[in-house]
Length: 447
Image (cartoon, rainbow, N blue to C red; front, side):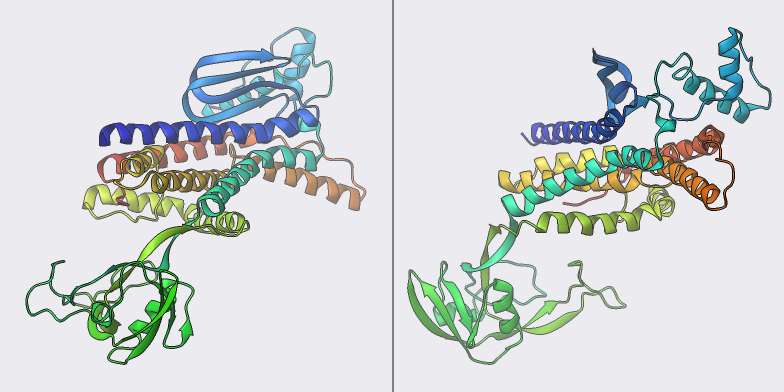
């Protein structure tokens, strides 16, 4: 049964990723068509085409590998004069010398020129104003951001956040020393203060020591700070207010950092601190958050992902080194698609209520869309951010020419950056390959 649940989780992630890619490409497609650019193809995935259909001038389709997508716009780059002149005369310009990178540049220009030669209208990308080109290229990442906001809104405002409430779930019978690895009481263990005071499961804590409490954390903070001090606790028991006197016992408990990880001393032993202990645990419920919680969570995640992306090569190197050293990977480090699939499968196979697993999948998909948003804004070709930088550079050149009354500059020929694009693509492939190997042989353990 767990295997089936794991497979279902992976399938859900693949479908969610395909939807995310489809929305990303729609974000490019819609403004492109709005601004009159001819779009030849809208494809989800890479590799062999599984299905396609032509509607108007655009062929819409799905390919075998849902690892990306693209739309093909006419005239992504300005035409090369030699190619256009040769095409107009009915001859071939021939292949230029200059080695591998020169050939790559010429091939890119030739492929681009095919969309421009014999053009009957101006529906080409490079002729658009700078702001229109920026809008088209921003459209994809922005769609991922909006999708993430919607997913976070469903997660936080629709389902809610698991919160420890003031309703008592269980009452411990005794106090078990922190250094003993057992969960059952033995003869000689002192009675837990809450049990001795008569607190029962189902009681709702209203106030502690005269202070009204809205969450279990509020009550817990007061109890932990009041070791050996008598407290009056008011509880709602079946609609009636009851007051009990409770004296928290002194207990040694581990100290945790902000991430919930136990702090250890120089000998590797957990640090302990004296706290007040009552012996009660709360009922955990989903508490719906305000509607603005979704956008807030999305932008907080953008900041966190950006912090990882800008040092991505270092993070990938560290992940790769764990394959050699066998060390545990950083749980906040980058994942490949394979790693994300494993996490999705683990979420689906958890021994937890269905709502918990749905919440986990929504959080994962929302985080993936945030990653797509941030990653595609990296200012390097072939990513969307690279095209935005090219458009902005052309805008700066035009503005400079206007200010100083210079001749209008020629459009920026981004095909000259093809060698840089090639290096970026190879770098991304290498980093992706390292992460896939790390996710296969030393996966991040979240559960």
